[in-house]
Length: 622
Image 1 (spheres, rainbow, N blue to C red):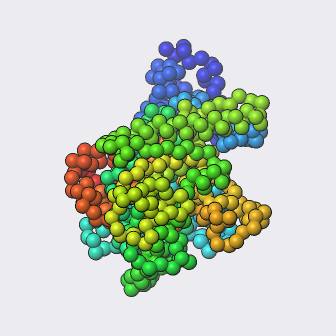
Image 2 (cartoon, rainbow, N blue to C red; image 1 turned 60 degrees about the vertical axis):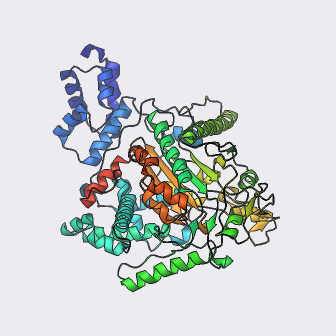
Image 3 (cartoon, rainbow, N blue to C red; image 1 turned 120 degrees about the vertical axis):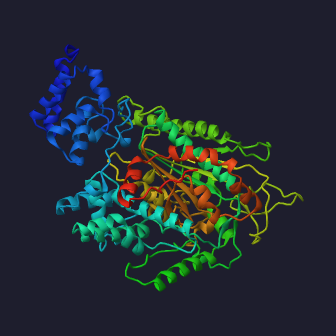
């Protein structure tokens, strides 16, 4: 069989000499393959997964590489053998327009990333490495790290750089671990609310760092954790004076279908990661009987986190302030702030589709079930293809070169937004035939926010590509860039102008009150509470085994797992009879929950969580 390994195949290995590896490594690789009588197909199959590769295991036994070096060699070897595309040369990069959509990738799935153990993170960082990473983060996370806030937060920037150096989302791992421990602790004891300072004192990983005389590194991580909630969104709150007046069961169906859709398109290789989907469900109504002040409406309820040295009284004061800001929200103002979604998309000339949701249609007397899965699958794939066709036409217009489709759907390196609008349309009638009051395309209840409102209208689904400054995923993207895109814009207002609003305002006469000629100019993003109408799930898809989801509610953030639909969501919803009945009737959701937990896969974080906490309570089993 070794005769099938022709000189042309061996010559490919010379690529390794250009990327830092010596001839002895190539010789060890060749000797092993010949001894095992591998042919070319056997070698390629063996290199599908770094953790299951006998070749990699053999070479590791010889050279004893650390995790970073081993992962690097695995990737370079796949590139040498043309399993994965090689990085473009400088001249090729100049031609690589549209984020490389015209470059055809390998038809094989990307290799599974090698897990970097929490206890093998290399915290050494040169000033040059720090500066290089700062430049990358300033470019990709301009919203999270604006120009006027780039000094005085060295711990955050250092932790981001260390994570990138180690090929692991270090800051996210720490923040997500804190989020899950805090949630689990609250579910066990409703009187508790774990603060960052308390978490840092008891976190097993921080304790081990200190025992290894790495106290400074633990302090960097603790400081970066606090900055995470300042820069992105405050952590979720477990109590709220604003309640979603809607059916949890419909939200469960919508989100379950989206989880399954994301999982399936990646597993079946219909969509090539990375890509991002922000899925926003606008509630039918929000209950609030509180007075409001319009100038406080869109304030972030937690602009500053507590200092780790503050006492418990200060922590309580901050939480009281958060509740105060919630009390002043007004649902009518919130609804009008969103306004007419289609009008917003048209004024900013965004590519979009608009559909009536059929699965739960009161007009069709549908029984629901899992029908939305089929709706979402078809309509989302149709939109991806529509968007790809537009890119293809634009590419062919500009360049005399064949456009190469990256995947069958066009999802690769894109960000799309999906909005389910459950608000009452303006032309819908009450039972007595009278229309509800109307502003900006949707009805409002004139302050009767706590009155029951039976839903007799269909939901609308909008699928669209957000503005050009936040609708793609860079080739060499940092994981925090997903957050940056969601914080930049989820629904633009009139004159957003791809993030260059000042240019629009210079051209137009702006009256300064948030409207221009009656058109809504409020730019919406996941960090705005919108009076309780902000309910977004953001899916960050890196690979089949690296799918993260985050929930944003009222401007708060938490890492999302399917169990949260049953354990956390009821805290934010109206305690109606039908909501209680759904939660208590386990037959409606329990058989699907364990399946959903497996579909939202993030192997790296599951290993990190167990490794760094010595706990096994990340996912609840039903």
